[in-house]
Amino acid sequence: MQTSDQKWAAQAAAGDESAFRELYRAYVRPVYWIAHGILGSAVDAEDVTQETFVTAWRKLAGFELQGESILPWLATICRFQAANRLRQRRRDQAHTADALDETLPDTVSVEDQVITSALAERIAREVGTLSELDREIFRLCAAEGYAYQAAAEKLGVTHAVVRNRLSRVRTQLRGAVKEASDA
Image (cartoon, rainbow, N blue to C red; front, side):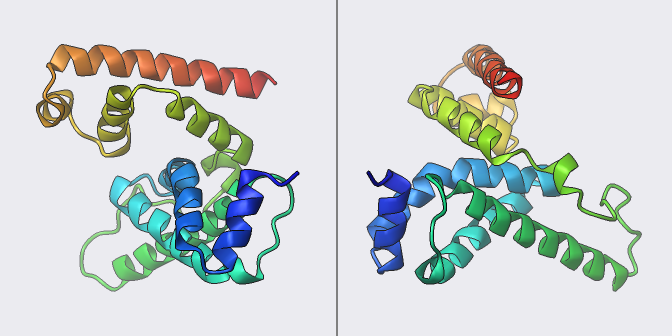
């Protein structure tokens, strides 16, 4: 029996854009969080996420899925893209008169900076179980860095709704992460 990733990857490799969109929808969140873990910047993480999927689309024709999930392959592409972004940042900073950003790491430690593929999958699954409002609150506040009040105004809810729901979401995700790490 073929998994949905295997089916989508085969169809996308044959040029089916809708199959690739399914892969994108399934894995954009974990790829984003991997990039964010390495780069520490929402803007750079968004760029690297897009670069990851553009690279995946280009390389999919020669890719043969090992196992059931395409996430490990996407995570590898993401890590390379993020490392390239860090090198570019350092080059750009070295060529400017401005002081170097002291928060920029000298090296990328994959083990320290990147969550495992299984954990990323678990988090993505858990986020997928949230209500639409909770997913939007999580996306705005956790992924895009909105303040509670700004997220509340964007979503047409109160500050208290955003604060309380985000607290519950974070508790739920912490539980999922602890459960995954205990397994």
